Figure: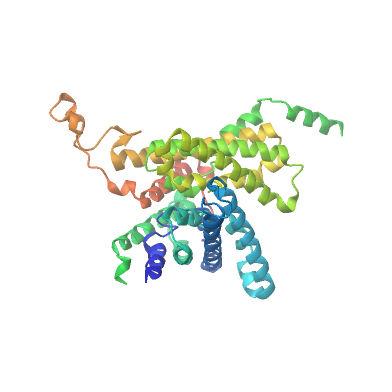
Length: 199
Length: 233
């Protein structure tokens, strides 16, 4: 039950994109059409779900004082996390290319982009800060990815429609995307009162 | 060939001419990392609730950006093209770790407040973007100036957004009371007329307001200051 709570909490209440502003660069850059946003969102769920448990293992069994080396190595956390993320993205890319060329083609350039998507690294850092255990970190990863997926699909759909509106010239494109994201953030804020334990 | 050599010699010197000045000034307006290049948005939004947080973040990013630009530019001829991303990430991650530890030692409260966002400087796309676009192709001195310039361009947006959000959200600037409810120590004094006419707007402290403030900043920037930036697509 706890795991479902964490999933719902990380997907809706503490949405990585709309509550913590993580992954905003790719969120704004790749949200011009729903189709590409869908691909990127899926890739983010995938990579978050994989890197989160791996980073949990690293931070608990390699870097902590009670871990393999018996010394506090937390200062190496950033470097190791980003190395794991970069290599996992590379690995996922190769596996998908081998076994599902059609998915690979639809994700295309978005897979390598994910390395520098701060939602991934941020998710891992939040996981450490919140002291989740292994299964909770998996739920947090999948939930966070799903929340990010929802956010980018939403903004892409709105941006597709807003193209036909008479927006003031200075606001066209980027400015409007910011304001729309703010409005979406306000909508998601209304979910804050939900008590996940009620589910 | 002779000309190329002369040009290289000239570039190696620490000169400060028109081109170098452009590197510093351009990111403040025409080529602003946040409002024009759309880089480094995540941290620009998250740390701007208070001005001192924004200032620390701006300094940290400028330092990491300038130094990583410098180091990458020094190593640029020795980095194989296939692994350049990993090399860049390692350079950035090492510098960010140094900044993180330094901040932890210097001001623990700010370090706690910024929490994961110091670590997230690694994936701040301004840094990767500038390394990839500029430092890999330019001399160390120019790359260093570019780093400083982009850091300042990023910092100035951070400070403006933080000023608006802190002033209207908390009624303070750098923690100093400017508007809002009358502070306790001023009740029934001659200065109390300065306060009380403004109610703090709590929305300004919450996340959507950062989006609105930056959206409006972009509007002002493109609509009034620099009309050539208008998105025509």
